Length: 267
Ligand SMILES: Cc1cc2nc3c(=O)[nH]c(=O)nc-3n(C[C@H](O)[C@H](O)[C@H](O)COP(=O)(O)O)c2cc1C
Image 1 (cartoon, helix red, strand yellow):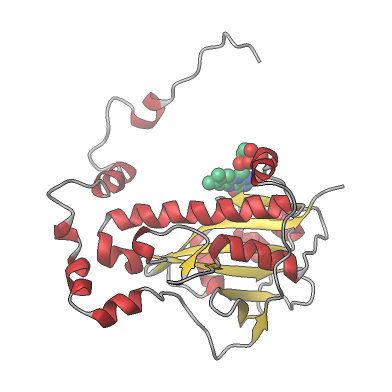
Image 2 (cartoon, rainbow, N blue to C red):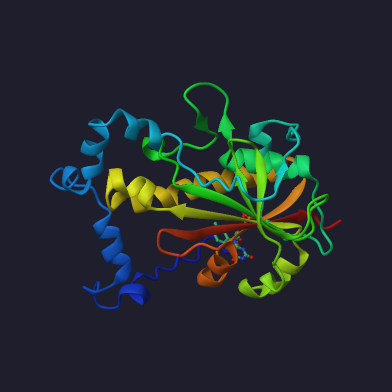
C-alpha cells in the first residue's frame, strides 16, 4: 500500500450537491438527536413510571418468555481461557467451515456473554442498556448444534435455556445475501430489538439506543466466540422481513437488527 495515496472522500457520492430534505437516513438521525427542549416532551413514560411503583418493577424484568414451549436447559458455559486483551487483539471475522458443529457449553458461553444475566442484585445483564430497559431479544437458528434438533429457539436469560419456537429452518440460507454462510454455519444468532421497551422512556432517541445495544451484545458474542476458538462472522447481509418471518416477529414492534454466523474454524 502506498502511504502517499490520498484518502478518498465519498461524501459527494452520498449527498450530491447537498443533503436532500427528504433523505430518510438524515431524517432518522436528526429525529434521534437530543435537545434541551425535546427530551421531556418525548418521554411521557418517565412521568408515568415515576408515579407507579408496579410499573417501575415491571420494566426491570422486560423480556419474552415462552414457558409453554419445549425447553432445552443450557449446561454451564465453557469458560474462555486467556485474557481479554488477547481476545480483543485476536478478534477477526471468520466464516464457519463446511460441516461445522458447536457443543452446548460453548453456545451457552456465547449467549450468556451476549445477553445473559449478571450475578448480583438488581438483576442486570452482561451488556449495558439505557435505563436498564433491555430492548433486545436473542434467538438461535440451530442448524448443526450438538444435542439440539434443528429449529428456531429463543434464548431465555432468566432460566438460561433455549425455548423452541419452530422446527422449521429449511431454506434459511436463502435469506442471507451469501447463502453459503448459512449452509456452513452450526448456528446463527439473531439479535432483535423490541423498540417500545425503551421508546416509552427515551422517545425517538431510544431507536439509537436499541441499535447501540445490539452492538454491545454482538461484540461480547464475537469476543467470547473467538476466545473459545470458534469462527464467528457478524452479518448485515440478510433479508430482514424474511428472517423476521422465520423468527415469528412482526418487523414493527420487534425487528431483526443483526446476525452472527457461528461454527468451526477452517483447519
Ligand atoms: C455491521 C457489520 C455487518 C457485516 N456484514 C457482513 C456480511 O453481511 N457478510 C460478511 O461476509 N461480512 C460481514 N461483516 C464482516 C466485515 O466484513 C469484517 O468485519 C471486515 O471485513 C473487517 O474484518 P475483521 O472483522 O476480521 O476485522 C460485517 C461487519 C459488520 C461490523
